[in-house]
Length: 592
Ligand code: ATP
Image 1 (spheres, helix red, strand yellow):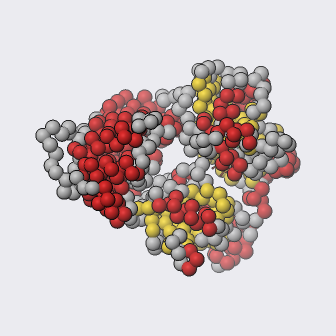
Image 2: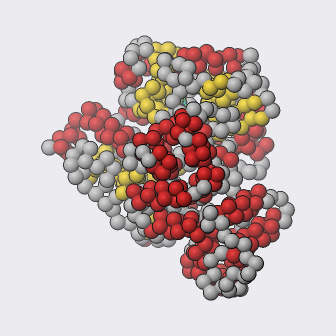
Image 3: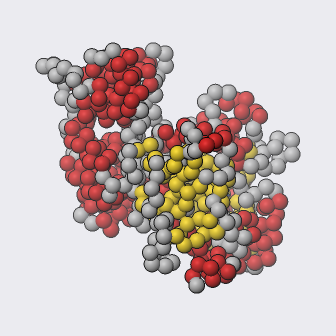
């Protein structure tokens, strides 16, 4: 398949400001793609070569990229650097620098998607000493035969600056339309995606074997499963009401969710975002082999502990484990334990259809005979009264937890779903309106005065999962230290785009726009109605969306969350309504 077809689609996507058009372009592209290339095509349009959990990166240094452009454009390095200074993006620089390069030679190979993908793959797989030179040769081999438009996207891809922001859900919609003619089939595709986390495999299977094959897709060891998620409740009474009177209550530990995949000779750990984090926790990986299971997939929360007292420490302590070098010292200095709370697969069989109670029994067996210092089963009780929950919650908070998780005793494990089979009850929900929200940064205003050269305020959006859109809910400018502001300025640079992203909806004007990528936690004093923010537009009152009053950054960057994991607009509506119950004076102010 000609690479120029993909380039054309990239260009269309980059220019559109309509979410529907994005899907249409994708549908057309998928229809033109040969079935046996669909997996690779699916990865490419998301700027990847493999599913995220493989953790494959190109790893080409910036100076090498500039040299590759110089080699193939016939310009010298300083000219290319000057163009890069101007454009701020290596892909754009390549496109510009290559404009007057000589025609392709008689011997040049055709630019096909297959060729481009396999060269990218070689670049990513080249490691070790001298690898930068080899990578440079591979990139040059492509650029030599590429047109400036092709060169632009080749370099954007290689340097990770494609920034099309095509979410998984957009791809699922497009696949359903392209291969079944019916968007409703997205649900079956989503289920298959939830148990495999691999959109490429889902796409190719659909094109080659059809919808029935998709419906029978099963959990596979070492392919992470998308986690089951919880709704919030305000108090024990609401929790019990949701659970039909009786429920399991577990500690909600403040750590990092981990999914452990274990076989006789291999173990891998995946984060909540399904990235491989085995290297951060070699101690956990090693200890997994003493668990009583031949093959299993388990879920738990890794928590940092004080090695002297055994007390739980806050989530931030785990940051010390995220490093490439000095891991063994970090293991020594920042010990962790894992509190297991679920088993999804055991000895050749998926266990997700079993009830919570049955899974818990299996989990006890897996841990029991394999006692070691790292693994525990999460503290749990079965409660039938509000006071049981409250007492257990007080104990949880005393030992450093955020609150409790309340789980329906007969519920199956629903991969990728947020629902009321699991609910979370945190201390902060009970006190007042001071709820925290996880929101996506989609735009920013330049700073003034002390903040010149940084961002003065950032535009935040919540996620509307029904429409796969990010709708603005607030600007935030407080709660940031100078270090935060520097860090954000640097971090967000990677995500700058030249216009509002097609999946972002807001009535606000911004100086800078970002592809939806970075999620931060904010706290607000109240949720109010707003004519200019578009989150949950019209759901409370026609013409009004929901907005935050006195929002403040809590200091937590939720890099364990993808933008689609941000607080949903439906959650915002629920929070607004709950606030009216607890503080009816808000109603008189807003709704009178
Ligand atoms: P939060 O922002 O509260 O961490 P979340 O969006 O990551 O939420 P939820 O399902 O809403 O996920 O809340 C549950 C989270 O709490 C899990 O992702 C997990 O990391 C953590 N957790 C701690 N203890 C438990 C437990 N016993 N059972 C399930 N999840 C737990």
